[in-house]
Length: 187
Ligand code: ZN
Image (cartoon, rainbow, N blue to C red; front, side, top):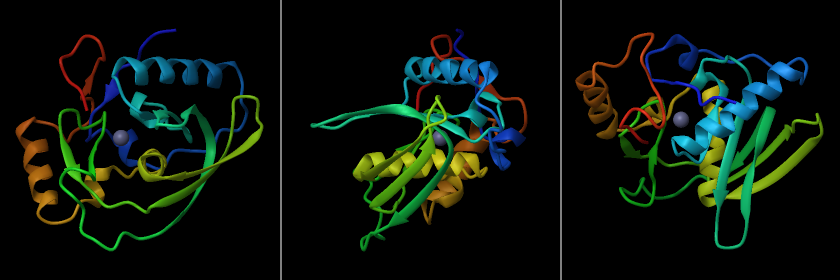
């Protein structure tokens, strides 16, 4: 199972709505196995299929808090969010990154609670009620399936800083990618 190249912002796959998985077959299983491996190699706490060039509604996640480890795959997920933060995004606490915009981090407010409902690799429905950082991961990865990057959600002054960073890196067009373990980049 190989580690896959991670697409960088600008590639059309990252900015398009991914399609539902019709059937969880061998091809889908292979993609998911590669997604786990790529996420771990990056390393990252989540990875969506469009990030490796597959326009499918699949993401993987791997996150531990003090009590529990959450690691799994979400196929054809839905997400119910609630709890709008009252304060402005905190430079430190709310600083988010993305493997498709490697090396950059910017603060972004997310809903405080997210209930993920999805299929696992056996086609069984599962549900996870998430708060805090896990809720953020779910929102971030779910957005990827609708062609939305966290860069698209940034507010002033961060939106401008992000645009500048992307321009400076020469990103923003199709075909840019990086290889975890080979290229010296990280989220
Ligand atoms: Zn991302």
